[in-house]
Image (cartoon, rainbow, N blue to C red; front, side, top):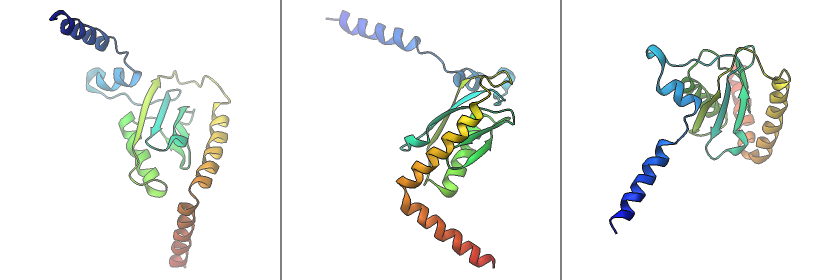
Length: 158
């Protein structure tokens, strides 16, 4: 009977050692010379937004160093670490769309300063418009409140 726990422990240790590292773990967990990896043109990133699956996406950083995100549009990604980009996105989504958003960015592939598909930017912009439309349909009360808030701001400026 003592062999069963030993075998179980050995199996757990074996499988836990086989966990593949993502590109993010390789670059952020073990940076060279104490430097954190900075995103660059051509890097492929994935975004997960907790409890908002319509906002989850995968995209390539374009030649301008930007990524198009649903609802908030173009965001400068080049030169930021993954953690910095997460904070920027949390601020942008919290500002106008989500309450206390939980956002996880993963670097899934390092780029080579060239986009692999020239039409990817156009496809991302079309996807942005579709997600924005679905979000507006899903959250009409929130958008009405946003419109009223904007009207009040416009009145105050006059």
